[in-house]
Amino acid sequence: MAWPLLSQNMLKSFPEFTHNLKNMAINLSKGQTINLNKDEHDLSSITIGLGWKIQQQKPGFLGGLFGAKQQDYDLDAIAFLLDQNDKVTTLGDKRLVGGDVVFFNSRQHPSGAVTHSGDNRVGGDGANDDEQIVVKLNSLSNCYHKILFLVSIYEGQQKNQHFGNVSSAYMRAVDARGKEIARYSLSADPSYAGRCTMVFGEVYRKDGSWKFRALGDAHPFDSFVELLKQHVPRN
Amino acid sequence: MAINLTKGQRVDIGLQKIGVGLGWDPNTEASGKDYDLDASAFMLGADKQVPSEAFFVFYSNPKSPDGAVESSGDDRTGGSSEGDDETLMVDLGRVDPRIDEIVFTVTIYEFEERKQNFGQVRNSFIRIYDASNNAEICKYELGEDFSIETAVEFGRLYKRGGAWRFEAMGVGHKGGLATFVAKYAKKFS
Image 1 (spheres, rainbow over the protein chains, first blue to last red):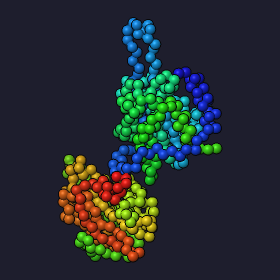
Image 2: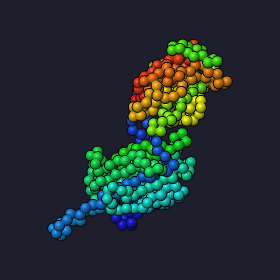
Image 3: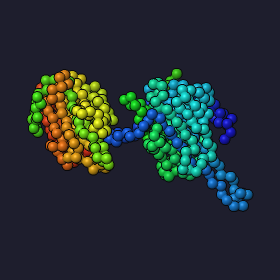
Image 4: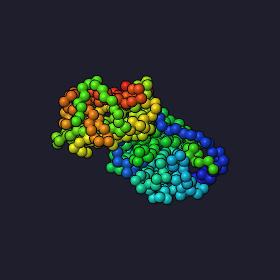
């Protein structure tokens, strides 16, 4: 979990990243039903919170002596800022620093409107947010039309970790007044077993205001780069 | 002078732009929940269904794709004005050729949770008028014409021989907006 390892991973994935771009139109909306609920939320800003429980070590002498130390779960909250064509306009440098992806290596969007609280690599009590992404939607430039929020387990596949065996993990969205809009309990849902990444939800512009939509699309891969590929413009 | 239409009565609309206005008084009881009435429009094709969800104009979709029906916005208390609190503006010259009927409804948001009906709301009405001179064509006093109902099909504009006509419907229901979605937007309900 050292930083160099991470940047190597990011670099390794880059040749593929630039040469194997899929021209896939993605439709993330689920279902076709008309939602008759009024949006009671103040979306002048939105906070995405991610929390999970720190790994309990097996007690006892033998456990300590012979048992391998159970590896910590390192969950990450990530945001993609997308333009009107659902694409990331600026990727930043080779490590994606300074671009339209806000994550552990690039925690402050150049506009200042999106901030990542910092990389927690072990979790907490499972009841409070261990990582947060705060977006000041009202001060976001007009060129951004949608923000996707993701959670993934860092090196989850390698460590045989997935949402099905993490303790008390959740992701939630909170409006500007502190009112919760949506929450997914990752570990409590059997359909997330074997999954290391979830597209939690999105905020998007509609008729001059912002709307939030919960998505909950889970994927087996543990790197958000897989999803980012779908949002990189050709050329 | 307004023509107060009785149910089923029809008038020719020799007009291009008309307004559908909905008004009501805010709830003045200190402990009472707000009355939140909503005016909506279902733009229907020959099969009496919306061709797509975008032709259902309501608080979450304030404008139809052809630009023919546009909402003034969602008033959640009835406090916007002494007169109309919500307005749907209709430009009959812009209606998509697939559409030959527009049904207007009034519903009470969360009528079940808030235990509300038209009989409780003070001075509620829905009216249709000529937008060029504000002359009223027809009006329903919701609280007098309805009581335990919570949803009303107010009236419909329909095309007959190339001209638009208005028919006052005044059909009350004990449901909400979902009742009309199930009727006019079956595929999306």
